[in-house]
Amino acid sequence: MKLSLHVSVMVEEVLRYLNPREDGIYVDCTLGTGGHSLAILEKTGGRIKLIGIDWDEEALRISWERLKEYRGKINLVRANFADIAKILKEQGIQRVNGFIYDLGLSSLQLEDPYRGFSFLREAPLDMRMDKRGKITASHLVNRLSRKELEDILWSLGEERWAKRMAEFIVEERKKSPISTTKELVEVIKRAVPAKFRRGKRTHFATRAFQALRIAVNQELDNLEKSLSEAIGFLFSGGRLCVISYHSLEDRIVKRKFKKVEGKELRILTPKVVRPSFQEIRVNPKSRSAKLRAAEKL
Image (cartoon, rainbow, N blue to C red; front, side, top):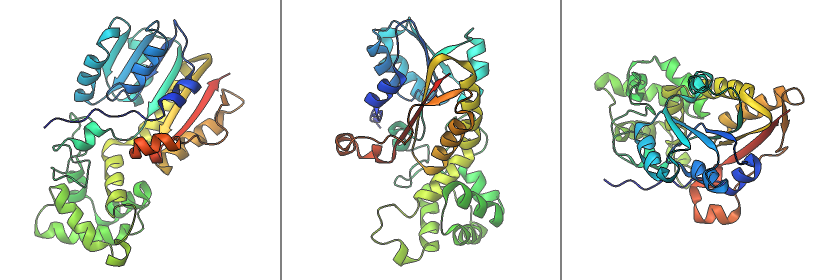
């Protein structure tokens, strides 16, 4: 199956706020298929050093090919961006001019029939960003207690029907393990009353799948740790851009920026920046994107 190349969001806005300069050092903490990195390299004529980080082996392979014109200027690393300090020290880098984070899933991951990220595709209930990880969504769904499942669905998905979903999951798995995305969607469908499923813009399984994915990959904890470490590596005048896609991520970024405002950072985006109407029309998946940026004092 041929997978479509992910379309990076808010590229013009990222370039404006990141303001990359020649001879700078830049880190793409969520490399994906290399869209933002390519834009930064093109903007600077390749006269920079760029570190690309991703824990998805396939994404790194695609980016390495996509950025081949600049191979002498890039270094791609398979790692978790939570380990940003360790990664940069291993590269011999003490200071950085800019970081870019584009959080969330790429089309590459959503469309892969074996990854289990999408509730629209039949797949094993996996959801690991890094296939080397040991915990899958299937482990959580089939092994956690009802209360633990409810807590994940509520705290990481802000799911209104968290308690009912957890109860229905526990009852279903007594009959047989829930092992595929389709099986989980069917359980969720039964848990959500019909009148709350019909005519809704958001699919009834969206928040549950989000919660499980975040839990499997420890996304929020990783983001907290990575942002703290990244700020410490910025040159004075260096910049940090973060694109988030749901309120939990955005809340972490906003709070982190506010916490160090005036001490370590100057906030460049007093209000969150959204994609343009034109971009949303061309790429509807960008509609939930939120960009925040800050500059090191």
